Amino acid sequence: MTRRSSLGRLIISMAREAARAQRRAEAENRRRIREQDRAGRAAVRSAAITTKQAKQRYIEQRVQETEELNLQLAEQLNELKSILANASYVAAGSIFEAMRLRTAYPAFSPPAHLATPQPPPIARAYLSKIKPLSKIARFFPRCVERHTLAIRAAEAVYESAVSAYSASEQTRTDEFLKEQAKYERELIAYNENVRERDNLVDGLLASYRNHDPEAVVTFCDLVLARSSYPEKFPHGHRLAFVPESKQLVVEYELPPPSIIPSVQEYRYNKSKDAIEERPTKNIDQKESYQDIVASVALRNLSEIFYADDAHSVQVLVFNGFIRTVDPATGQDVQPHLISVRVTVDRFREIDLERVDKLVCLRNLGAQVSPRPHDVQPIKPIVNFNMVDKRFVEQTDLLATLESRPNLMELTPTEFEQLVANLFAKMGIEAHLTRSHRDGGVDVIGVDNRPAIGGKVVIQAKRYKNAVGVSAVRDLYGTMQHEGANKGILVTTSHYGPDAWLFAEKKPIELIEGAGLLHFLDQYGTPARIVFPEDYVAPPG
Image (cartoon, rainbow, N blue to C red):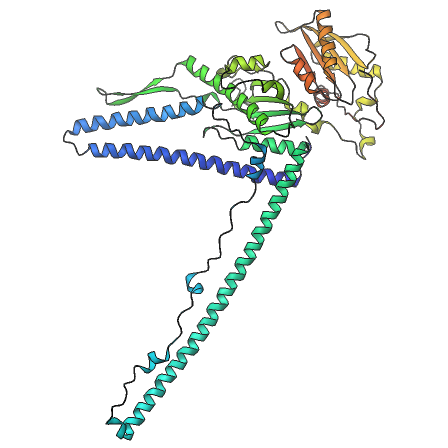
């Protein structure tokens, strides 16, 4: 998996925030409904207080409290039982569309005092205050002079008011134009932001349709990020994608066993005036948690496969783990409780509404903890680090200075010995056999661990292109001929979907190039895989 570009990080950050906002809105809606229900029940209790019998009122109130606790408990249990049924099936187009800015920018709405001009002064309003001269007063010069002076004074006041009005209107108009210009700048910026976001989304969508590895990982990350689970569920996950085999590995954090309520029912004890708890049976807690683990796994598989209408993911691996503390060491640990690998064609044959979840997963060859409630770990079918492309170096100018050996430059004998030594360090008593003409390596080994050990057939192929199903069939035939109880096929490249499908439910482990490098690094032999430009894969 290549390092994400700043574009990818920006988009997934925006989309994750949108998904978190959606989850918060849904949680707030559920909380509001619960509050309304509680308020209704509280109103009923309040009404009961008006009755005459105080003791009866108190008892009824306590019974109501008990019923409310049981109702909350029932809601919580129903959420946990409906994890798979509440899966979010959304097509890829809708997921990308939700990332766009579709809210219309608000219309221009300036402050009221700027939007509405004040009425101008009216001359007659000022002159009307001057009493007209009577017919008699007109014959007296002083009266005429006083009247004339009063009119001139009113006119002066009016002209002053007009000047003040003009200045005020000019100020209002200037402020209005400033607000309008500010709004237009903000509108332009918003529209530009919309265009930039659309371009980002269009680019990501096109990259996803073209099966770009980074875009596929980003898209699948968005699918999981927008999926809404009960409030106390964690939302941590990591993704790694192998573009050659179209295999996606999901490392997903499961809720701890404590997510199961320890109370089965609340009862009001009238004689003791106490609300007592009837604890959940231990076996019921274990079965419920096992159901949750299975539900989360199947839900992840179904949501990704459904949303992936570009068919970028052909093989999906789900590894579910929890965060806990090792009681023996006190250290933080992350044991895996479930691991399943399935092809898209195989999964589409399943009717999730009718299956028994655990039977379905076991039929898919899943590794499921027999006691997940007790945190009994399992070994993941695919180690996340084994498909992380950071382990595979890309050819660059520093390649010639790399001190680690390039597996593609080893002689056949050196490669054979390397594979044998690796598995010897892993605890398998390994013995080389004659090499195949196609460049494969046979190692017949014995795993001496009690109960889980036995005879092992190991084959390794230095290939550049995908390893097909025929190589897996050959390994399986060799296992049967040798009487081995396990087969391991290692390649420097990757496997096709048919190879993964054939290996399902068989004691066969397929290790791709990144996984081989991961194991070599773990056991003290760091290496790299760089294919020469003129490399030709051996005939298969």
